[in-house]
Image (cartoon, rainbow, N blue to C red):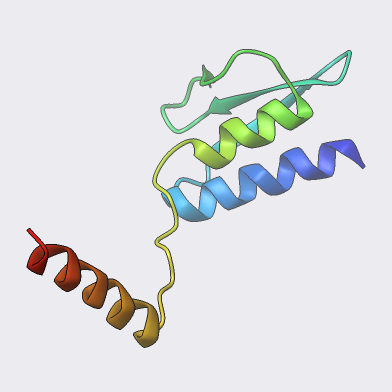
Length: 88
């Protein structure tokens, strides 16, 4: 069950980067590290980390998913910028 969280984090990374050659390597003691196999050689991307730290590392690694914003969010941000600009 613990390995599932690590695998799902790597799957999200693969989707964000478009690189299907990332893999999670599990070590004894519940430690994981990330490797990139795209060059044909296992390139170690992280040091061995606990599950929680590994998931945080993988989620922060590479390009991030763009934030979704509604029309109301965009209009509100524009209004804030406008009010800040006018008060100088």
